[in-house]
Length: 312
Ligand code: SF4
Image (tube, rainbow, N blue to C red; front, side, top):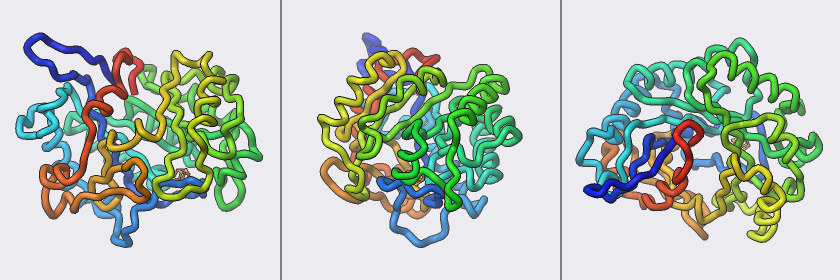
């Protein structure tokens, strides 16, 4: 996403894109032991009501518009464009709604991306999706079937994404949208921390491989020590050119995230459970955003030195 440069007159880091992560649903067909997609709210998720979804998007886009000089974040960083990244749960359990959100966002001049577990991607749908997004992310924790079962990365019938399917999906996405950026997210946890994923990642050749240390924000299940995480990172040094590493501290108070119920939420280091704002629908994006802490420095440094073409 981003080049970071300082002008003489303007000392703020400049990001080419400001990324807003909207977790549109808590629902998922997998059951990862470490799952972070728990937002403790029984109310209807926004994505099931198109009018509310539209109003939420309008409010968020207007607040984060690079032209909105009243956004307090502008005192710390500047940005050229906004990208809406859809996540979950598993967003592609609602494929039509996802396409509608992506189309609407694009019509408002917003860039779009999605992160999915891949289980609902088939060729026909991928053809539609890939033309809508500038970045497609797949979450893959292991190349090993048994380990995927242990982590919980299978559906109710025990199905999991095969490695051949992933390679085919990536090839197809590149054919449909040659400019697409492909990303893999891997959560390093108590099951996979000893795995060697070099062959898998090299063969898929994503532009970015994000490697996260399991963040015990919802549960401690499958958590790992910092030294085990570091060992995994060391083992994969050959992939430094694509690997982007996030330890627990890097993931705290450093993302702009909205939950399925239209609230900003934030990870906090050494705290279990998220911190939430009031609903954006009730108080507006400015007031809601002001209720949580965001480290603009950590946010900006996530994208530091990443060439625009490759940044995600
Ligand atoms: S794929 Fe993601 S949302 Fe689904 S169970 Fe795993 S961590 Fe949770």
